[in-house]
Length: 143
Ligand SMILES: [Zn+2]
Image (cartoon, rainbow, N blue to C red; front, side, top):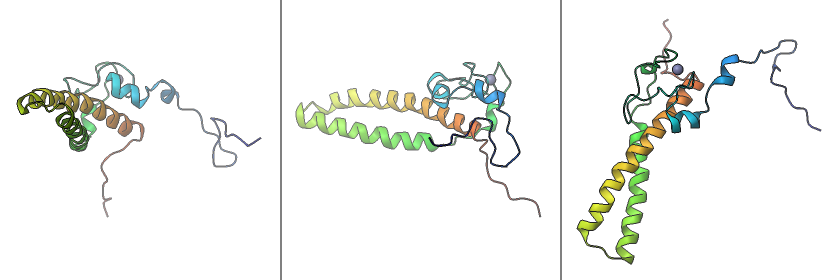
């Protein structure tokens, strides 16, 4: 039977690592992303708008402005959703041959909803991972 490291083991012989009491109560990144939960306390306070983060968590006071998810999710999701919608448009055109105005009537709102909805989830997931991994911008140490 292989040896399994218990939760309190340490790579340093003789030292022990106490379990992080906060880590057990933190919501999973998927829950943060899908439900808009604060990554620290789990309150539903992450978003102030559809895709805009709140400045801080109203429940625990976590400063959410210090996290910077940037424009990466928007660009990445636009490419993914755009690619999928082009596939849908080509399939519709080759099978049903709808008029161009009908394609636009279907695809433009679908693109807006798909990008906005997935952007909220992607931004929430990125913020959750930033919080969990204590990620921040790199700094050059003063010499
Ligand atoms: Zn909170």
